[in-house]
Image 1 (cartoon, rainbow, N blue to C red):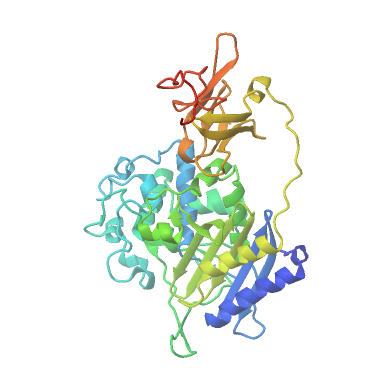
Image 2 (image 1 turned 120 degrees about the vertical axis):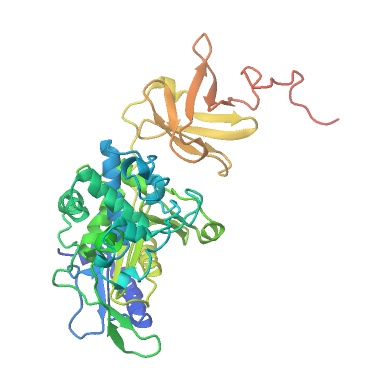
Amino acid sequence: MTTPQEELLPATRRALLHRIAVAQTEGRAPSLVAAVVRDGRPVWHGARTSVDGHGPDENVQYRIGSITKTFTAVLVLRLRDEGALDLGDPLEKHMPGTGAGEATIAELLAHSGGLAAESPAPWWERTPGSLRPELADVLGRQPLLHPVGRRHHYSNPGYTVLGALVEKLRGASWEEVLRQEVLEPLGLDRTSRHPRAPHAGGWAVHPWADVMLAEPAEDLGRMAPAGQLWSTTGDLARFAVFLVKGDDRVLSHESVREMRGPAAPMEAADVADGAAYGLGLQIQHRDGRLLVGHSGSLPGFLANLTISVEDDVAAVVLANCTSGPLLAGVGADLVRVVAEAEPRIPEPWQPLSDVDASVLELAGQWYWGTHAFALRLTSDQGVSLEPLSGVGRRSRFRANGDGTWTGLEGYYAGESLRAIRRPDGTVSHLDLGSFVFTRQPYDEGAPVPGGVDQEGWRGIG
């Protein structure tokens, strides 16, 4: 893959190189490699290494740990879209007898199924997967540590269960299903269960001395769907594009957008940190922008994929050390550098190709009680409703084709908006989930619940 470096300004490229150089030096990583994607294409690649003349390129494999979970989530969403399961289904419906059957598919995807964070001892990341040949060996005698659905508790066994679910419903191994349904269609030829040359070796760096120890690279066996994969910055850059735009050969734009939405209960610390979890994707509010993606780690390796959908910028960072550089921060910084130094240029404004006069007459100012709102027509034939103050409930609405609209976000998500007309065809008011919006505050000509005081508006005197 040829990286079109010239598409970024020299100052931006230097800032990106400086960021990863600091990360590699201060984090004492044997090597660190990164890539940046903008507008759906790779625009920068950089690497730092402690080995002279051995700078890894975008085709060198590193182990990506829990970024594997995002791939597994894609397989589960594919099954949902085909009708093979519903995200609200309890696991027991498809896999009876696991001891974790009360958890729904959605709760397992969002790490809110109540399962333990790890499998029973010994430490699964540094021991052969053959020690845990059955799902019961991964889940242990008491799979549930928390009430199902009540809290976000990251669970590697949870994604092991999801991988087993994929295998049962597909009648093939997780690895084979992943290859046929995701890797091959997206052209991720350098993503695999086992390392393929060229690949980095995994190292532990002594915390108090500049010396290293080789880490074992175990096959995780049944736990592979939680963290097995090896990949490259080149492949993960393409995967980042997919997670923004979707690909109908794999998963639609609507479904990948669903993955990016919060799906797990947030604890107080999560709220303070601006962190949440979707369906196989981590979500964070950092430096004023919303970031989605996933981090990963296994002994000898660290990995991070960070995406700002609004900026259409993504970053991939991989390192071959057990601990050291905080790659989530590095990834966020790479996104920020590009987004701020070379902000996205918006598409030219275009007028609507067509407009329904009965919808156009609804545009403008409306009042819910004394709260002023503006209704606008959107380019996708829908409408938006937002407070004129800039603070409060707002939403975009999808046209249903019958003169009604359905809310897409926030408080009004799923709620129905419709215009109520008088017998003569003129608009009386808007009805939004039973809320009455009028052209004037408490318009006496509209059926305001509770009625309008006949004495009208008045001062104190």
